[in-house]
Image (cartoon, rainbow, N blue to C red; front, top):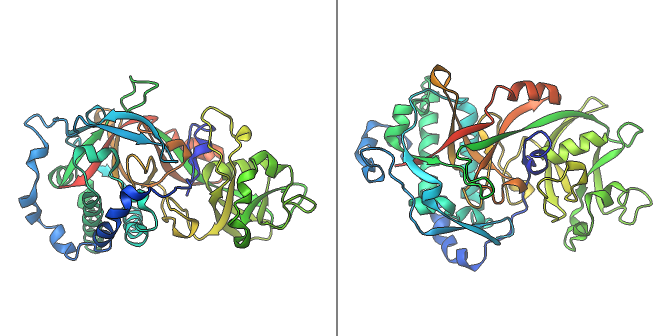
Amino acid sequence: MSIRFNRKFFLTLGFATVSLVSLGSNYAHTQSKAQQQISQPSSQPVRLVTTSFQDGLTAQHTTSSGKELVAASTPYKVIDEFKKYKFSVNGSQVLSSEKLPTAKVNFNQKDLLFVLSNTRKYYQNYAQQDPDILRTGLLGTAGVTLQDTLKTLDFMIAVLKEDIANNRATRLQDPNFINSHFRVIKWAAYKPQNPKQKRLRITKYAVFSYPGSRKKTSTYNTAIYSLKDNYITDKFYTRYTKQDVLSGIYEPGGKEFGKVEPLAYLTRQGLEEALMQGTILINFTDGSQGFFNVDRNNEIPFIRGVKPTAQKRYWYFKKVDAIKGYGYKIDAKISIKPGVTFAGDVLNIGLGRVIVMEYGQGRNKRLRMGVIADTGGAFLPNLYQLDFLAGIFKNQKDFGRYISQLPEYANAYILVKK
């Protein structure tokens, strides 16, 4: 998963892997029932995508104007990554019922299916271990339940599988199909520090390919480390800042030598990129390459407004087989794809929310669909921003050229199966 937390303040990007903790007793009593629901995807995918679905339209969610507020007036209590209360907001200030604009919805069909399927499997496999994903969050004020989220994922997966099997453009690109089969909930940005902001800020993150060495050299002299399993339990690594690590505590002669394993050596800039993005593709001097993803951090919060090199938060890595998104531990993280993945506030907005962002005007109006399948320290809490996974790039110049075509702010819609 990408570590958007540091990068949000480097290239106006942002992301960070999050070390999520258990929700506590108030969710424990729901886990058994929720797990039964989560582990049973729809058994009739073909029926899901027929016109018979018209019979189940939920007209009560809209008025003749199509703009009825769907959120209740009961304040929602926003929490941070440590489950601490931060502030309250009424759902009606953020969520309203809308129709999707009439423009083609853009995304890569196979990539979206990949991310949707992996997100659904995460619910199925890890709900008991990660009760954070059972939270209804802010959308609960609009009557959206956990089962609604799962139903949305199941339906979209079924539609995509059928359309891909029939070698046709998917119906999920048709705004009329979406308006017929989904509640379309407009998400207005809520930023206490800037109440005038109504559109979501869309930052961008990426995986960069960087040169590196398996051994320390004069050029590649800054390591990324993996924690050794037999030393993790005492959480010794939480005592050290990034600056402590860079001082050499894990290198030969250092006070903690032997407790971690160097996975690769990068330049100092390469390290900061790895920490900012959360995932990095290293091209080794021996001709090999590999993906590496953040695993655990030192539990020091990311501080907004502080430059990356001065941040005290530090991440330890592991080797992975793909770009990774959200997950309560490294071996459980969701495999994701660029172009269809957003990082966002999983605790307050929710994992697996299907987002359509709208930008441009007139004939240049664009709609792009993706899934919240990643998160980071910059999003906990954050009701005004999403981070878009743009791709894999060789350098910042290529990345900057690509994202210059993307919006800085956009209208955002959350799709919920009727």
